Image (cartoon, one colour):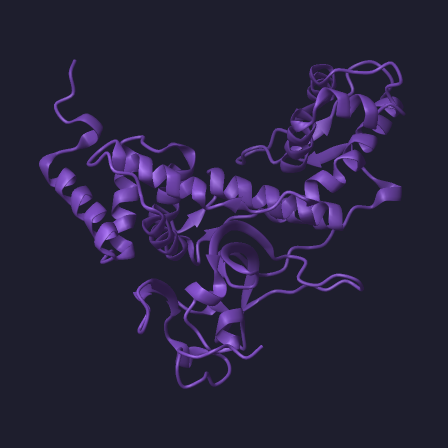
Length: 355
């Protein structure tokens, strides 16, 4: 049966999408306009997983599923797992599912010759990538849990030599360490590409220009700002070997690197008033529970209009908005409710930050 309205494009929906695309071209977009378009693209199954997830983050107060949560937990969990690894007492009988999948993914990403060269101490006669992955999948199975999706895998060691199996897995976990901690944030370009594709499949054939891509990135940052993530306490403890803090896991736009990005971290209210980021210290590490998740190519100096260093470092404490720069011909992020900062802010956003 031929669809009367392909992609659900009724006259009203098509008009709204066309208006949103025009506002991107004219730089008069409101973030809520883009969010409504993302919701339409999700329902029409356009743009792939990242676009679907971006829309779902708008539609739901707290993300307890989906690619954004999965990637956030994977990146955060992998970094924390290896930072807290007990190398001389490494228990691999039960592994967090995200860690197990990361190990498999890293092995799958290696070239055959690299595996042969780097694992010749345990496989002197060589082993193929398919054989190694099949062995891991054979040794582990997901741990069934009542009322929850599986979050762990357990070593079942069907036959064979359990001690040899444990030595093998320990070796592979340690083998993947440097590769795992080198995994950086995902470029937000992947989401911009998906949004671009959504518009081109519905209302225009014209791709985003370079300037439009930067403009859309700013609005996507605002859309993902202060999204809550659901991280189970038992997963937290398995990764960090510590009881979970009484805190909320949340995404936040960050200017802590040279470019704007989105971090995942744990937050609490200081004195019941000011939102602050939890830093759980160890003797040789700082900010153990903050991890970059998405990155842009937007310079934080150019695209964040804020002179107060306290506000720049604590964007999670402020609503954000996209506005035209007061003296230049491009748009920037600004932090709203500046007076709500913990320390008295500078009198104006305009000016050079004094670090």
